[in-house]
Image (cartoon, rainbow, N blue to C red; front, top):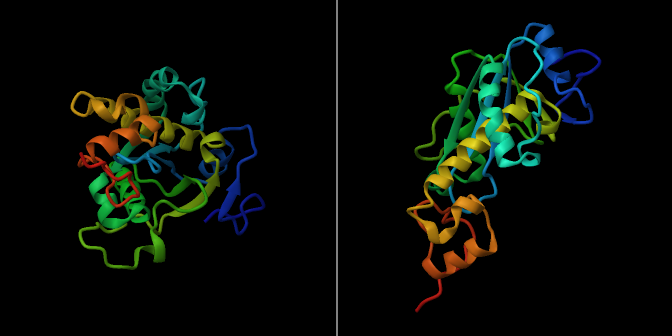
Length: 236
């Protein structure tokens, strides 16, 4: 865990700094290999949730325009993909499907997707900066429960600092959010021709009014999270 005046007994951090490398710099200067972790798709009704992982092992200025993916346009996010991939020491994405979310519950599915993202790295991180108020690499009870088919959470003991609004405060987390969102959005757009009535090219599986109405008319697909409170299909 981080030690020192800035991080003593730290488990949660509220992001207030305008320096997007303030957290990474502190860690890297003491010899850590940092991975920023963020997720997209948690609140969607359809499609996967996707977790991005971006590794930094040296302090270098991030690509111009990097920000929380939600504050960027689709064009701005897409333009950042190449520069971010070149800037990062390593990066990876991991996902959990709607079927897995239904089988395991959202919290464990998030941990599995994060585990898959870190497992895809070629550089092994020693410290994680995770967006939000809880550690995505762990599940309730630190994964100490039996869920059929769920893989082992191999990174639940990795040293972590959670950063509230981390995608606005940490370059590595912001980069992870952009890469994850661009990938997931492209996946949902790719499904549009097959499921055009749900409007996924526009709503990306979230609960837009037109999407809710399509579920009422056509019912859910295999890409919908059926364990969620979806609108009931109207019978003819």
